[in-house]
Amino acid sequence: MSRSTSSDPVSRRSWLKGAAAGLVPLSLGGVLALPPARHALAGAFTPSPALAALKLSGPWLNGPALDAAALHGRVVVVCFWTYSCINSLRVLPYLRAWQTRYGERGLTVVGVHTPEFAFETEPLNVRQAVKDLDVKFPVVLDSDRRIWSAFSNNAWPAFYVIDASGRVRGHVDGEGRYDQIERLVQKLLAEVPGPAVPETLSVVAGKGPEAAPDFRDLGTGETYVGYGQARDFVSPGGLRRDVEQLYHPPRDLPLNRWSLSGGWNVGEEFTTSATPSAAFTQRFHARDLHMVLAPTSPTRPVRIRVRLEGQAPGPHHGWDVDASGLGLVDRPRMYQLIRQAQPVDDRTFQLEVLDPGLRAYSVTFG
Image (cartoon, rainbow, N blue to C red; front, side, top):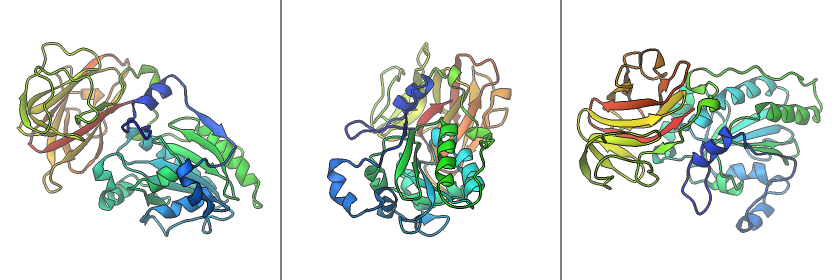
């Protein structure tokens, strides 16, 4: 999950810090607030600027394009997300459950896919991700951030709950508050003529990377591996930009610091392995560790090996590697590499690249 402003680079760091502290904003009531530059545009959206904004981008997946006219009389949950974001993935079980439970009663869930990384702007990649993630509700591709800007949005994920008349009645940034969102959905559906609306809350349990995070044991923030947002790098000699360099591991690696070893070319958005056995290492404290990874060529998957404290992860392996730590990066997406069994402790993680041509974008925790 990420937050951004007009002056700051896109980053999930501020949200993770706030979520861990329980500072999740919830705003109920009110209307969609557009920035001053959008006021003239908003006039064309009457009576529903929020829903009319959905026309600003495309294409649409899982069905025809939706707008204010198509959604007239329906309660709508608009969720901004992006498919490589762990925080976005963990909200999918709730969106699926709400669409299934309330769809026939008058709810439509709309996913606005606004990318963080360049590969997420490619329609083929998003289509594949939507299929892999079993996302069946409508999704609009917002690669130019037009809908994002019209909503003045600044977070992945972000929820906007819209009533049958097209007014925004609730807004939540980030993970959590699902019970409050669902209660609001039930309230708004009850305002629309039709059968009785269920009064109980949905029972939701995500699997694999979609499982709820463990914020109590979250002591490490997101790490970006490209130099555009890289911090806390400690390999000797520092980080060199846009040139292939042979890196060496530091003598000691403090908590929440990372290093490279072997041949790497550090770019602005991602860092590319250049030699076999190149490695990324980080000292972290969290139950789960994920990396956004991609092969440099879609036809050449890259083998990886994961270690924890220098050993095969065994029972601590993530969804995308086996107990020996072996995995395969075959497409650009997020890979869950570690899920620590209790107790969670400070650990040293290493990703060894067994073939050249791996792109590493970021590391996220949960």
